[in-house]
Image 1 (spheres, rainbow, N blue to C red):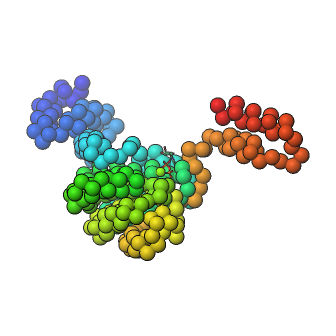
Image 2 (cartoon, protein in one colour; image 1 turned 90 degrees about the vertical axis):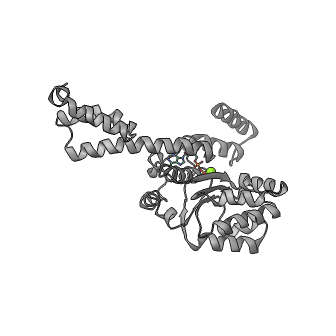
Image 3 (cartoon, rainbow, N blue to C red; image 1 turned 60 degrees about the vertical axis):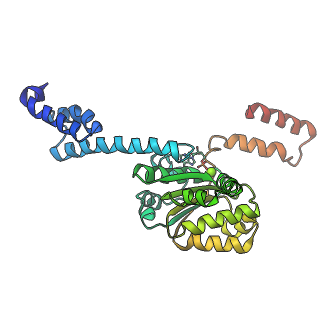
Amino acid sequence: MATKTAAPTLRDRLRAQLADLKMPGALEALDDILAALDGGKLQAPAAVEALLGAQIALRNNRRLQAAMRSSRLPAVKTLADFDFSFQPSIKREQLESLHTLGFVERRENVILLGPPGVGKTHLAISLAVAAAESGRRVYYGTLGDLIASLEEAQQAGRLAQRLKTLVFPALLVVDEIGYLPVSRTGAMLFFQLMARRYEHASTVLTSNKSFSEWGEVFGDEVMAAALVDRLVHHCHIVNIRGNSYRMRNHAELHRDLRSAFTPQAGDDESTIRRRNGRREVTAR
Ligand code: ADP
Ligand code: MG
């Protein structure tokens, strides 16, 4: 190889330096980067960027692996995997800007609202992944999970400890507000948690219910109003109006399902039965 004969000692010194600095990502990328430099495919500044970038990518990946073990994130989702063309009600710039994590720095909240399947959990996780990669502590739970863990801790006389654990992360995801009803004690415990996190650390929340329906979700209008008041004080609201991504390939099935269950003018029993039969075949 050209570099080896031209400057073998320099390459060896670089290797030793990267090893000494404990930069295995950069060390592994070194040969390819030097070859690209030699081949004129890279300029020096770009080569430096590529070398540091390789190390940063490795470090971020390690941080994410560690976070996946402790944060209870159910999957890895990223903004790069998100198809904005499918969800035109979402402003790409707003989401890109949120992923630079200024809101975490400023201890602000993010609330993702919208019907099922529109990407609320995806985006909440991708924010948590970005925060984990940046070295921040993150934690994920559905509202149901978080409340169950608080109730359990309370019964075991360890509520203070549990609250402390959930107040600590720089970013907490509270997913699925509104799918399941919340008990009165559960609502009060969750309120305590949010009151403690208020202006202390960021929370990303998702809900299929509008704020006006949160009173019903939490079984207490006054408490829900106080909760929403704190949450939206320093808050970015992402309102998603669109179709379910889960159902994107099933437009036809949807139509069939709808017509199967909705008898149309002029239908007799055998037409409906035939249509239902077709539905079963299609659905399978
Ligand atoms: P919600 O939480 O709003 O019910 P999810 O975030 O769980 O919806 O999305 C359902 C599935 O579809 C997930 O696997 C998610 O990754 C995927 N998804 C949703 N919206 C998009 C999108 N715009 N681009 C790519 N994948 C998407
Ligand atoms: Mg969801």
